[in-house]
Length: 118
Image 1 (cartoon, rainbow, N blue to C red):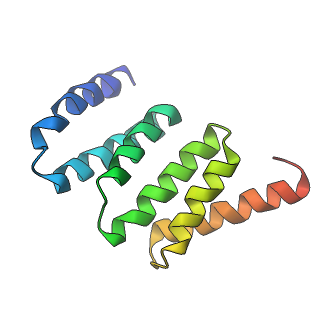
Image 2 (cartoon, rainbow, N blue to C red):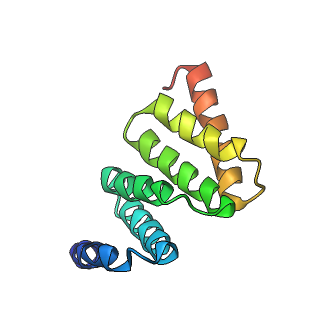
């Protein structure tokens, strides 16, 4: 984990060198967001997914960003924020893996709310 965190910091320091290549920036930000999620650091992951969405990804990439943001917010205990982000992924009406994941997590959160688990 320490090596992964150090590599993330090294890569993050280079993002600005791709200022004219937004596609590369989005790829790198998504990879860093995913890496920090795997490292179980949703607060850091959240930072990268916000930056990813701020770069206005192509429509097919938007559900990924919103779903990932929702997953981070859920892990951080921001259930209203999580639901809003997940719903945004679904509302895009793009049939892809991340939209399906968002629908599934939304259903789980709703079920937990109905049973009083949240």
